[in-house]
Length: 422
Image (cartoon, rainbow, N blue to C red; front, top):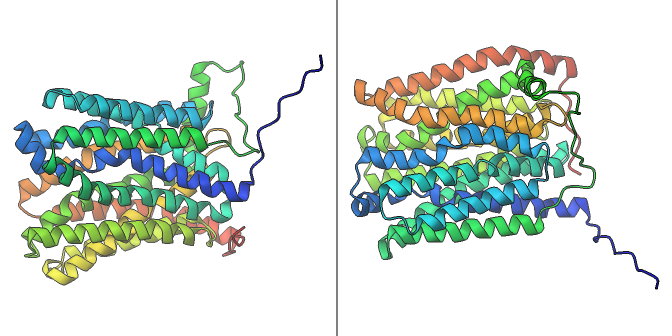
């Protein structure tokens, strides 16, 4: 009896399907971060229902950020070896399972453990989604695609900050974890159903002749490359600014610019909205310039200018201060799109996943340490100026250390434009 050969899966048009991949990666990241992004907005409900202090509330905010310190490195290594579909899909499922389990948590301690589990699962989402988008988009549109994907995070933060407090007030804090778990589960399902690798992508191997130590040395050795050092330094400085704006905006406007708490919160929402626009606009601009790092340097210069305003009497006037925080939102959050595109293009071939994990792990150190450090600095001095001064000095030092190398590269290449969009 003659056997019929199985039909190959239907081919997809890469130029069209890449937009499906972009939408899937953006949705999955927003879905898995949905609950964590809304914790701060639920502070009143959590403190009331769990009877916890402000410090304990802050620990909840940080709990989901600890696991990625190591998790990003592990996820990056796995992404260089296996299909993104299973790495990201599994991580998103872990996030969903943790939140669904947390909806039955009896109290604060168990909720803290749940968020540690959620952080472990989320470690695969950021580098995995970034690598998946980078592999589907050529350089002519890679920055624009990265900007759209990264805009999903501040947009998701705004949506969760509006939805979760309402749900907590109408029902209970456990219902918010249930909702967050269901949203994350949907994100996992969407990614595993729709994601596939582009036809030209293969998984490189280090070869059996390399020991584990030699493989790790080869991976961490990429830090010696000038482009990777620029990525590390600029990421640390700008993620610190991003954390500072996130934690201090409302307090500064309330205490120093004489805005009501509600109005100050609206300014923060406007700043986040500006960050959404910045991540798309600046990333699209990076597709058109000779070096993407030029866009990153522009963000550093703009951040320094904004911080300078806050350290003058003009920064204590309601309107100028509010406009300054919107400015800082555009550049202080918008840098991430072109920065990620520059990172993926600077990483050695076959090591993009590990490079993403390594650099994001370094950034995670700042995400964990900067908010309490800036808060302590303000408490000790009674002023916000030292916090703005530290962020300004850090950004200035990074700009001074990386700008000469960029200028040399641009002068050798000439100010040529990138090829038009495909």
